Length: 560
Image (cartoon, rainbow, N blue to C red):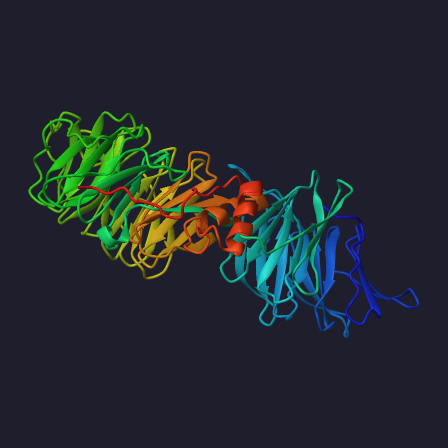
């Protein structure tokens, strides 16, 4: 909460307004220090006051849970905004004068306290048009719009957040203060953020740095062989990556781009899908003829093919303990297998068409599936359907996944929608990505974020309130996304035969290292006699520990 008086001069600096603990709002003439008028109407302490950009309105925020608008010239109350349920600590007009933002403190309910809430109001109609909520944040103490009115700064406790107003999403978070941040502001050009805190410091921040920075990319398969038709996936913990090209050639990598095995070719029908176990030591492949095969990293078959599906295998995954497999097929059934190829129990039946994705819950107690019939279904390990089909999608369900606590299911569909479900099939949240097929989903290890990948190459990070917090563009269709075990990286695999790794909040050193890795194979940089290449290579070696081979020719390991 701010001091007893919050002063905010109007643009021409002739008037000053103050809000007081006695519930009054006072208008002063700045030059003479003369009190011109006292507005009354609040019933509790006034925490903040601010003029509209044109100086005709004055807004005040109070512990009585209201925001009031006052006509400066007529010395009259215009309206009261009354939908806050807790003391309102701060209020701010957008520079274009069209919007008003207000922020309240903690809301006490029987189930506990809810985080601070920000409301956006249309100044012309006095109607609430949006609200931002971050359940993990305490009371909202300060607000400020960017010069273009598109972004909004908020402070809660020691943390500053930058919101995109139209998207109602957080684009950046600034951490560094050690006590409550009581004031935030943009510079006139919008290129700098200033904040002050009870910790006795004023800090300046750059609002522009990318929340994710490109870390590295590496070629899964030579383009001449894969021709863009590569299946990519990762182990459950994101430590190992697998790529399979159109010729059934498989390669395994670690998340730093180091190839762990020699490539090998899986003989037989076309591989439709593949999976790595958690240890990265076994590969399961599902083929167009309905068979499943298990491989070691040397390309040797482990046991006979798994047979039982009558049509192509479209999804396959290992159980959390790596002791079982679950598969979904174009024949509409789901099967659970031991690692010797023996089907456990009868096929799971219920879907009326192809099963596009199956997944174990992290606790290993349930299986979720998504299908062509636009439903999501939950099963126990014996194949009993738990409850009714989850209905809400209007196109085929392409991908499903569990949250780390096994209590939430996320599903993505062919028309670009993502749904968060409770285990009883109740729709928890509908996320509208776009109209492009959502083919990849993964929760962060802490369960607070969800990353999605689409056919248009867009990768988005969501909070569980349904807002996009970050997004970036991959080069081609995205087949797989995965957070690293520490939640600091996102691994992406797609149709461009490449794996991409994006790092969360990297500093300059990691950024330089990423840039050096990216140009490492550039033909001009590999020419040691080029002066420009020598300079770049010297910088990369000195500051990023990235080196080049002695010769510019780089052979590519190939398969017979």
